[in-house]
Length: 232
Image (cartoon, rainbow, N blue to C red; front, side):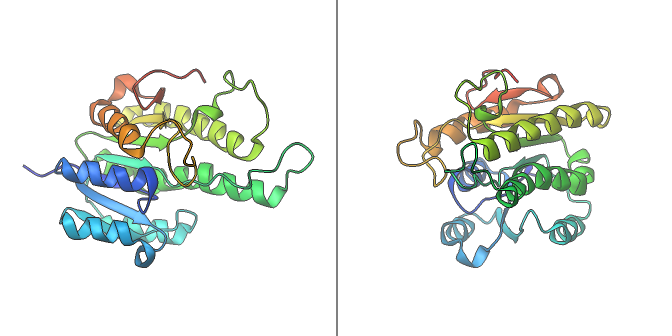
């Protein structure tokens, strides 16, 4: 029996690296993508320990690279596609200080690029057994949960990503593809900082359980790493 396959963007560190390791440990084929594999020491070490981990160069905003990667995979089934790569943007841009160029960059990476990757790889996902697309979003993208304001760039990019998830869940249902929006928690990563609430191990253990059990019944949902529903 062929092992299931997961593709993970932003796999060189943080949540993406931990996802790669935990799925590899569970005997999955892992297609680990990052911008600069030559600088991704931990990811390359992981691929040395697990022959099932394959490392690919991918800047998610380079759409020629995205197309080339899809062509490289050809008819290779991808059971789970995880759009994990993301950026926060400048943290000190409050009202009156927001710069359009910085906002565009955050939207490009966090919202537009995930959609483009799904479009490029939809045939590979559709030909798999599990047929799951997962977007790593954030609780700060919840409109009803916004009680503190600010964070315009990151917050709006994740809110927009959630809307992409909702539309994809409708448009791809006929092909048997489920689409989820996932909040990994406040995680101790470069983005989350050392004072965050949980480790990558805890976050990814929960995310992995959600990913491995999700199907069409969960499609279009916004879920926390522990499986709890988050209001849009």
